[in-house]
Structures are given as structure tokens and as C-alpha cells.
Image: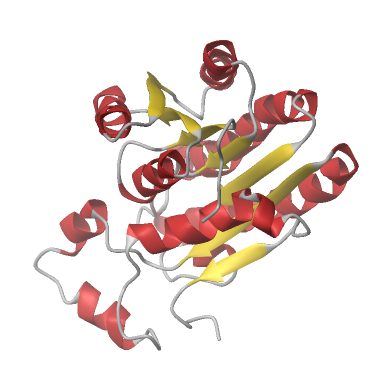
Length: 250
């Protein structure tokens, strides 16, 4: 099992779904975890679950589209735990489900601000602390929408392609300072949010049919891939985008 004893991790969008699974998985492996989410109540729930299981965590509200909020949350993590070794940038907003010509500038800018610029803000304020700690790992949660097109999702696909490019460029720039930067690219995952969107439709069965493994991913499966990329077991891996999609890309 990957061991993060003595290490400090932060996870954005950790209040529910994939982010929550990642935070719980890191805590289970003995990392101290900063649980950050726009929904402070959900972040508190995740941190409480970690505390009850014998782990160490604190929670805070984070709006990744606001650079000041990002700087404050990252700084609070370091103040609370003394260092930063791992950062998982998971927070994002979903597709609006609109074709390009249907989108307003406001809708476009919101998706880009959160998914792409928010990832930029996060890395901008995480990397200096990782360097001060002697190195560390960042994992950005992209999407299979960062690797190929998804119909009716122009802003989402553009933002996630941007995250992929940002990940690769930062990986090259900071490799000499012992900061490894990778991304995971999940396909649709069975979260509470997906179930809410899919209720009353055949979306789940369509996605399962299109997936060679014949089912949707569980959040814990995405978390396992993410945690591996953040661990010392992937010590020679940087600049990689790991598709976790049940064979869909193939």
C-alpha cells in the first residue's frame, strides 16, 4: 500500500464524489489532508469522516476561480500542517450541455474560469510550497474530455484540453525542482451528481454500453489511480495523462 505517513496533502473539490474518495484514500494511507471545497458543509463532512476513522484533516471553503481564495486556502494548509507534499486539483464544473453557438459569453467564461484558470491558480500557489518541501507531486483531475471531443460540451472540452496542456508544460518546467505533475482523465464516474443528472434517462445504460468493461467507474477507482500518481511508487512518472476510462479511449 502506498504510504503517505508524515506527508501533507490538499484536495480541491473534496466535499463529494471523486474528490471525497481521493481525500479519504490519502487519509487512509496516513497523509494529513486539507479538505477544500466551495461547499463548506460538504468539506466539513469529509473532514469529519477522516477524523472519525483516526486520520488527520481540516476543512475550508475554497473558490478556485478566485485567486485570493486559492492563496488563502493553500497558505492555511501550510500554516496548519507545516508543509505541503501533495496537491490534487479536482474541483471543476460540468458541461452546460450546449452547442457552441448556443452558449453565452458568461456561460463560456464560467467554465473556463473554474476548470482551467482555477487549475492555474491552484498550481501557481501550490508549487512554491512543494519546492520548499524539497519536492512533491501534483495530480490534476482532467477528463476524457481533455483527450477527445464530447458533443455539446465546447467550453468543458476546451477547458479540460487546457488542463492537459497546462499539466504537461508545468511538468517540464518544474521537473528539475523535484515536483512531479501528472493528470488523470476519468470517463463518466458513478457519483451522486451523475445519478441526479441521469435520473429518468437511459444515460447510464448508454454509457455502460459504450464502455468495454461494461460499467461506469466508481469514485474509488479514480481515486486509486490518482493516489498512485501522487505516491513515491510513480517516482519516475511526470507529464503523463492517465486515462481511467474502462477502455473507452482504446
